[in-house]
Length: 169
Image (tube, rainbow, N blue to C red; front, top):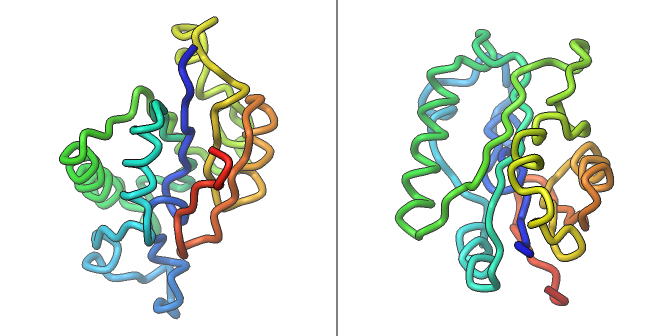
């Protein structure tokens, strides 16, 4: 049975530019600021530790309004590409990525806290996931509900601060 660390992206492993306290007008954030890749304190070290403890990784992220002026798709892809490159340098890869581009009003099945976006992953790995010892790291209440819906332990990260692994892991 394989343990997984399900990871939210913005505010959990990456600093979310709109919420880092330096942007007084988030809808008009500069391209430079939006493409600046900044990991939370201890995020890379925490992921290294989880890897050494035998965890594999799944990215689960809501990206509402993707491909709009607020969230241009090319900026999302640039940041994601930089993130993957940095993680790859450390031997950290995602076995699966669940990215929901829908807004809350669309009521889709792939938006956290629903787990529909994991359907293919769950079917492919049926019987091989150690839900009891798997974790969901996130910074929002919806991440906690997602963890409950998936049947894994929730680890709350204070948004944009420090990535911390519980001491009993």
